[in-house]
Amino acid sequence: MRGGLLAIAGFLGLLLATPVEAQDAVRCTEIPDVVAKTRDAIIAAAGQKDFQAFSPLIDRNAFAASVGDDVEPISYWEGLLKQGDDVRPIMAALLKMPCAVYNGAEGEVFTWPSAADLPYQRLTKKEIAALQKLYQGQLADQYIEGPEVGYYVGWRLSINSDGTWSEFVAGD
Picture 1 (spheres, helix red, strand yellow):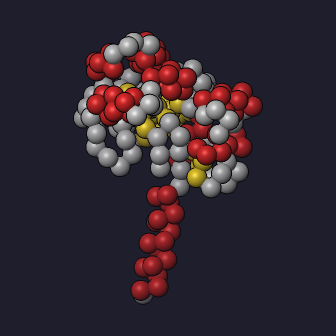
Picture 2 (picture 1 turned 30 degrees about the vertical axis):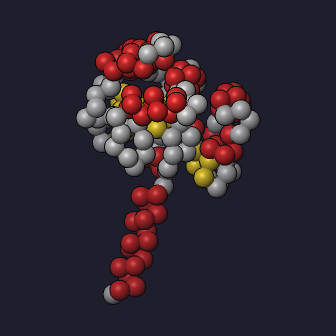
């Protein structure tokens, strides 16, 4: 009995550790107007000199700015800037790349870049080139176990089908 429980626990662990690609993510072909409006507002805010431009776009009860930590997004990004990492150009660059979409608990979720939800082998040469540019030729560093067998853990940004900006995170 104990061995059976361990096997079941191991199987569940594999399911939970599987990247989003297992949720049947596909490359975006169309983006609903409400999602496009949020995307465009984030790009516009990223062009501002003040992180407060993001404030009206963030529902603090439904937004993730850090994997595993509950942080206040704007303060977190300001802290990253003080360390020399400005996330605003990253946001804008991601949102100019193709996205992927999958069905989440509350409907469709649109995620940039598509690499966040699609395996490396399904990325186009153009997508890979854009990511290489973003990561200054170090794209392989953004994959757990490398791009050939691993999954993307670099910066990703998600917008729900109702236009709610749900995350801008990096990590696993």
